[in-house]
Image 1 (cartoon, each protein chain N blue to C red):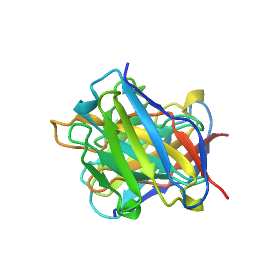
Image 2: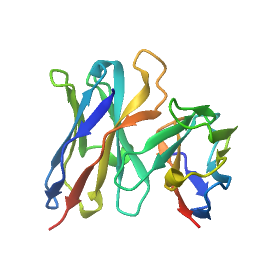
Image 3: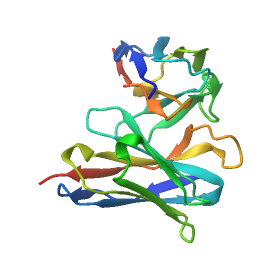
Amino acid sequence: QVQLVQSGTEVRKPGASVKVSCQTSGYTLTDYYIHWVRQAPGQGLEWMGIVNPSTSSATYAQKMQGRVTMSRDTSTSTVYMELSSLRFEDTAVYYCARSRVRLTAIRDDVFDVWGQGTVVTVSS
Amino acid sequence: DIQMTQSPSSLSASIGDRVTISCRASQTINTYLSWYQHKPGRAPKLLIYGASSLQSGVPSRFSGSGSGTDFTLAISSLQPEDFATYYCQQSYSTPTFGQGTKLEIK
């Protein structure tokens, strides 16, 4: 079955960077977009961006521009999200999620399979 | 960005009740509206997409309706496993989510 398995809990100091991985299985990585969504404590869900695993091109939420990089390694079917210049308000659970439709179809930004989430804590 | 507003923010109901959750978009989004169920410590689960299409494997007691700016998620007969937080999400433009509706046991 389709699965997205994320890396474990991270703790970083303000100003540092963090790189979260999302290993996919049960389908071909390059057939579907991968999105990243986060949820800060007590807050709702926030979309961070999307990566096309076939071309490695990515589009980021305006709020994240300049601090986030999404990439992929097709040899391991893994997608990565790196966030730099971390702030206290970046403390959140970070999720990867797959687009419902294939890359060859019209993009619909509906997320049908999600990773289990990675807790990132920014603390001094 | 398109703002999504859910109501109510929280809701208490009993097993077997029918409940509805509303979601309003700040501008028209046609039917580019999805609903997710989220339980603590778990990954969100897609329930409804295209405003009214039931995701494969989701029980038929869940249904969605609406178009334009106003949408509704209905659960026809609440089961114990349905107590969770529900989010709407628009995919008409840069994805945005509602603030969530927490469904609790009365």
